[in-house]
Length: 460
Image (cartoon, rainbow, N blue to C red; front, side):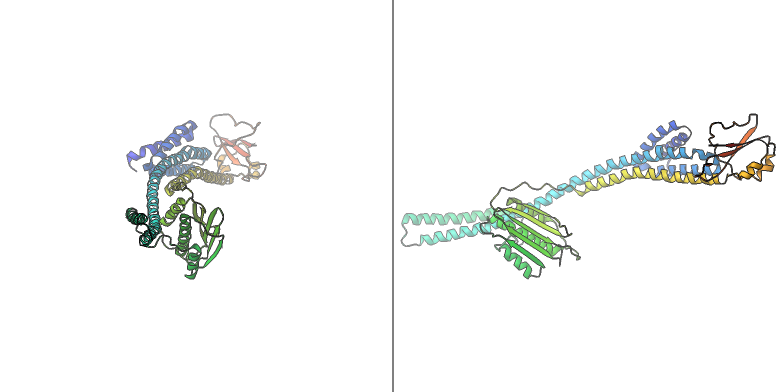
C-alpha cells in the first residue's frame, strides 16, 4: 500500500480505534470513512486497513480477556462509524458515476434508435410511394389509352378531338412526372421488387400461407368491401409482416390470425405460440416500418408478448380515411435501467452488509463471552468450603482456571470490597446457564497479601 494512498485509510482506522475509548471520536471517524468511500482508488487500502483493525481487535480480546467488555462498543463503532459510512460513500460515488455513464449511453442509444426508426420510416414511405406509382401510374396509363382511343372515333367533332388529344398528352405527362418524383423517393429504397403489398386480398394471403405449410388457424368476420386503398394495403402489410415474423422467429409454432371487418374499423390480431426451436435473426426494422404504415393510415399497431408466452401483433385501422396519428415515442434505452438497477443494488449492499456484519460480530462476541463465562464457573460446594484467611496458593488448585473477564454488576445492597492497600478481587460465575434465576450472579473473592480476606455472593 503506497504511502500516498494510506493516509486517509490509516486516519479512519485511528479514528475508529479512538472511538472505542471515547465515543465522541466516532463522529470524525464516520466523516473520514465516508470520504474514504468516495475515493474509488482507495477500495483496496480501505479493505486492508479495516481487515487489519478487525484482526487486531480479535487478537487483543484473545490475549487480554478483560478487554471483551469493549467488544460491544467495538462492534458499534466499527460498523456504525466505519463500515456503514464507507459503504454509503461508495454507493454515493457509484450512483453518480453510473448515472452519468447511464445517461451518456442512454442518449447515444436513443440517438441510434431514432436513426434506425427514421431509416425504417423512410423505407416505408418509399414503399408507399412505389405503391402509389404502381396504382396511380396504371390508372393514368389507362386514362391516356382511353383518350387515345377517343381521338380515333370517326364521328367525334374536331374541338372534342383536340380536347381528347390534350387529355392524352396531359395524362402521359402526368405519368412521366409521377415517375420522376417516385424515382427520387426510391433512390434509397433497397427493398426487393414486389416487396410492397400486392393486390392480393387478405383471405388469399392467409390461404397461401396455410398452403405453404404454416400451422395457421384463421377467422375472418365481416366484409372488406369499400375499404380505402391505404387501409387495405396497411391491413395486407400487417398480416404479411406478422406471418413472416412468426415463420422466422417461431418456426413450427401454431399461428392464429383473426381479421374483423366492422362498420367502423378493421381489427387484426396475429399471434403465435411459444416455440422450442431457436428464432431466426431479425433487425427489428420491419415492425418499425409497419408501425409507420399503420400510423399513416390513421391506425394503431401493437407488437409484444402474448399471455401464453408467444408473440402477437395487433392493429386497429379506421374503415374511413383518417389523419395519421403521432409517431410513438422511443422507448427508454436499457442502459439507464441498468444504471438504476446497479445503483439500487449498491444501496441494498450499504444497508444489508453492515447489518449482517454487526449480527455476525455480535453472535461471535456473545459466543466467546459464553465460552469464557463457562470456564469461570465456581462450584457452589467449593465456594462453601472457602474460609477467610486461606492462602491463595492453597485455593488456586480448587478454583476455575479462568476468571470472569469483566466486573459483574451487583444489585442494591451488595457489600463493597474490603478496604485496605493491596486488596485485589477476582470474580467467578455462579452459573453459565442464561435461562435460570442465578444467571448473572457472581462470586467475589478478595485477597490481601495472598490471603483471602472476603468472600461474597453478588446478586445481579
